[in-house]
Image 1 (tube, rainbow, N blue to C red):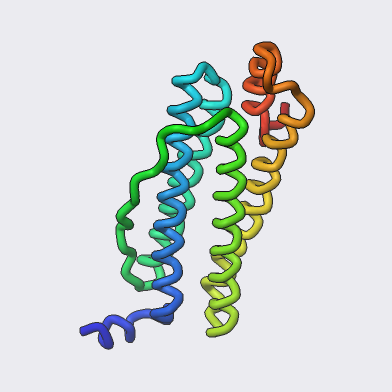
Image 2: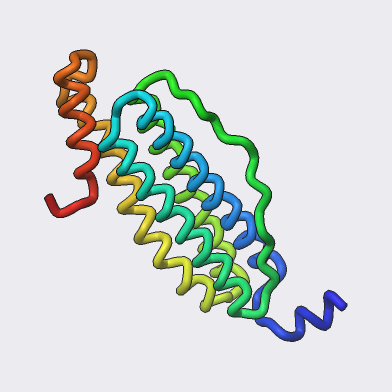
Length: 175
């Protein structure tokens, strides 16, 4: 049966496996951002929390985009099982350090899919994944900007925390 299904798609099995793995990575990132947003809300950082709620939704959209692509090209999209994510964080800054680490890991994974697609001459998947390459450049830039703000604003003072919360919420917007 597996061989018959493979006849209905040009999607190589190794690419399908990599795309399903990326679905899991994106879904985990969404859950991680939700946990971070919840922590921020509980600790009085309402604006930063709203920013990460939006990030969580964006990661979910990335997951769905890949999931739907797999089925569109005749593959089998697998609903990922998500491991438990951390619910507590050491500090406001640590939330954004973890966010940057997460975005870098996503970028590396996406780059591996593009490289594998090139290796097996899967130009459709390579073309599809180029949107994610561009998106990740922006995601990493935004995550780095959040950490840069900690160097510019005194995050130890109550006023600094208030200003940081407001400024983080503006990242990626035209304000």
